[in-house]
Length: 165
Length: 101
Figure (cartoon, rainbow over the protein chains, first blue to last red):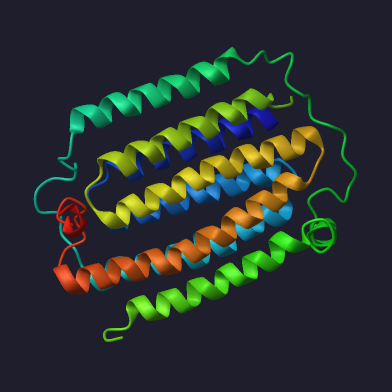
């Protein structure tokens, strides 16, 4: 049952990802990326990462993709001369194939018997309380740095989007 | 039946590679941006899978931080794209060659 659900989500995630890269219209790409994010949220929920699954839906599929769709509609673009960039296409193709081949080889060389089996976890694994506890104890410094990063991003976005500085 | 860990890793690698294909070949800056998000998502999947299989919630924290960085990147990146469109009337990455000299 778990395996079946994994294959379902994985198939739709890959289908949406390929469709996103191939589609001509940016709006179509954005919608397919949202489908992909929903599938990944399903996989996260299957992996007991409940808070991350919800955050994936709210932050990624909600906030970020709405912002992207908003910009797409604001700019109202049309593809004029094809969708493929013309800079050194052959070199890029070689690079992509080398990278894909490398990843597939590395992963397929991994011996499944040597990989860890899923640990028995208690009921608090991945809940809001458990994540909050380690976020405010072990990972307090990254949390504070993230707040500074977000502040810098807000200031940067305002400065960049202003018409006259 | 349990899903083996390497299934998750293969899916994660495939999503990352598809994202790389998009970043390197597409012409529209918005789609390049979305492909970067896809790459981040592929990496997040392997973080979460390892976190579950090793029984350690550190991976959840890393995913949390990746989401924070992605949100910041969305704000700044889309602001850059809008200001690019305002100045050049295009978001075509082939036409953006001001720094080329």
